[in-house]
Amino acid sequence: MRLIGVRGATTAAANEREAILSATGELLEEIFARNKFAPAAIVSAFFTVTPDLNRAFPAEALRRQGLDWVPALGAVEAEVSGAPRFCIRVLLHVYTDCPLEEINHVYLHGAKSLRPDRVRETD
Image (cartoon, rainbow, N blue to C red; front, side):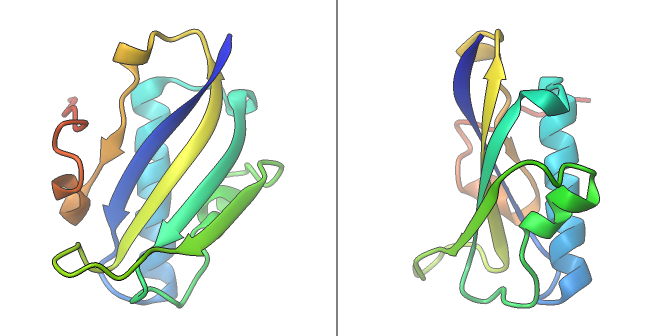
């Protein structure tokens, strides 16, 4: 097994606590489902939000999914003209045997425009 980084991003519907946590929870669920990670394989999580999101810490969504033992850190992204609003990003550090070309980086909703080269739509 080796340690890899898995990226993902999404947008919240509004700068409201439940909107932020719901969007983050959906993103995490998609990352886990599309990559079939065992929870024990997750080493840490790094979250960022755009400056217009300040009503919740996205890492709380990780704890809501029962992964409260995963170290998580958050930060605020730089404010960039034209970037998606209400954007939440995550970088998960995960141990896996999966080949790098099979890793599915997940971009949802308004965040799909960030890395169209990394988006893989699945059923």
